Image 1 (cartoon, one colour):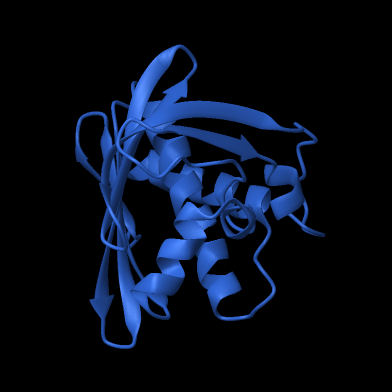
Image 2 (cartoon, one colour):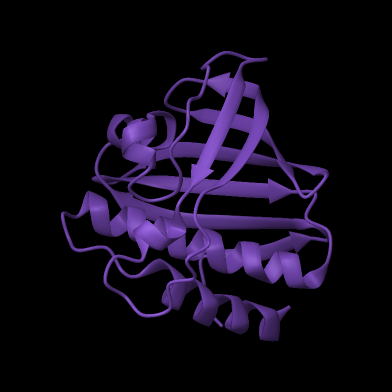
Length: 170
């Protein structure tokens, strides 16, 4: 399976995707709540090491008119920024079901686009890992659509299909 997300070690997944546009534009879609809400989750980021982050997911809204809405409503997660190199790298903890995971976003110019690498650590269990792999693939696919000015693909329909494919591959 040729997918942008791989299991690089037990409990750690890595997404590697080239997105359209300059690093500064992609960075704004990671760090600014209103832009991040279009592909991942709204919520404030206090952009300093030790600053709080909040992720307010409304994946049903991301599904637009697509099939498979879950009507789950808002899911909120918090964490703390552990690394900040503006327009280059951002890491934060992500408190999830009583556990603390960590996400790192790294950005680099790639031709006319931006290479985005996301590493998500401390994911316990095969089912969670596959679900997160499908989630990052679907969310960044929506980001790619938004950056291209296209109608975003439906989240839940895409994520469920991808999670099944990742589960079969790991």
